[in-house]
Length: 503
Image 1 (cartoon, rainbow, N blue to C red):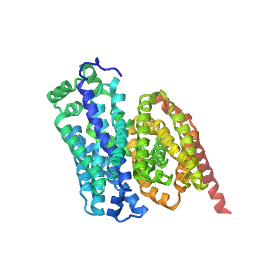
Image 2: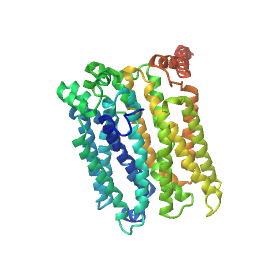
Image 3: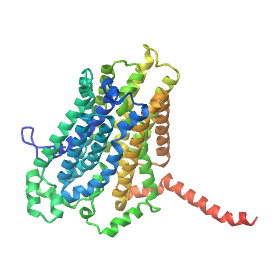
Image 4: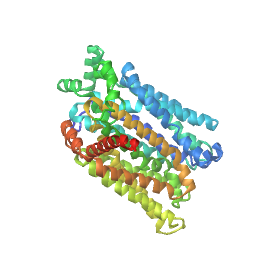
């Protein structure tokens, strides 16, 4: 991607995309602080030494509200405008963080996380929609990955914020990270509302041509690119988000919109829907969010005794994720989707089995020795491998394999599976770690290995192929063959059933 000379001001759409991407930073910060906060001494006293189940509920309470509100995000952004939808969602997110910072009992803290989740679901997906609608096609790929990159930077910020506050001898040690997050979110909401123009594409679809022209001018998008943006397929945004493009924006009649819900379960599209739902769900069951949310607990079990050491180790893991996400994003289209998913899965499963075996063999509990360092390094490698493989390949693959007419609907369902799995992982990981030092690793390793095996058998390559070629790949793939085998078996059983009744 090339921009004007180094001493020239970047175009407005670049600055707007960068500003929009800071919404991902907020989400990353919350993910980075919630794990360390919940193991701080002052917080555990405040909560009353919660059981592992309550611990998991506190962390995961943000996810289901976010999943539910995300399905209304498109409607909000369609009625009020993309930038207003982002501003409203981030404002609600800020209110939730402020409630957490000022909570006087655990119920109020969980309520704050629920409110935070509602805001998160409303604004997070709309970030990429806005970037896609203002960016020239030749720059869209890089700009649209900005929110994901800023999420990883947020993880670093969150972990090291807690590293800096953990020694405060008061409840301010865990309240300050949420207070800072609330301030960041309020500031982001105001800046978005004041500075970001409405999406010119959204204005054009509402017949507000003069306002759209002024917005294009502010964003600095060349006239030749404006027409390309207006005429391109709306489902491009589904590669990076599960927000379904609203009916009016797609310019489709309501009857066709309703038909999409049924079309996604047709015999032609059903195998691809099931594969996408499976992959997006198993992406979380690999245990990656167990590592992100509960890194301090993992490092504590590995032998790092002090909070400072555990939080520093967690921060280093976030830096690793951020560092490898940059090349993974840039070279995403240069790597095989299938090979990245299969080999990435095998490596991650091997690492999980290695860690679990060390714990099961009682090789990590010694105060000294190589075992605990093997565990720590393996956690780092696991996070890095996930970030360069599954984090990129699965999200892109699950969208691009869907037929044009059902892509938005199928992508939304697949991301719903991802949210649900994320909730389950966040909820049960503390209990698994408390019951067994190795059980969680074997569970996540088994899920990851199963996914790699399924991908070996049923995942055709899509990199560099157009939609027609992808269609042919699935017709020729073992997935289609398996469907035919099942169908033939069912017909055979139906033919045999009357004879069995007669005898």
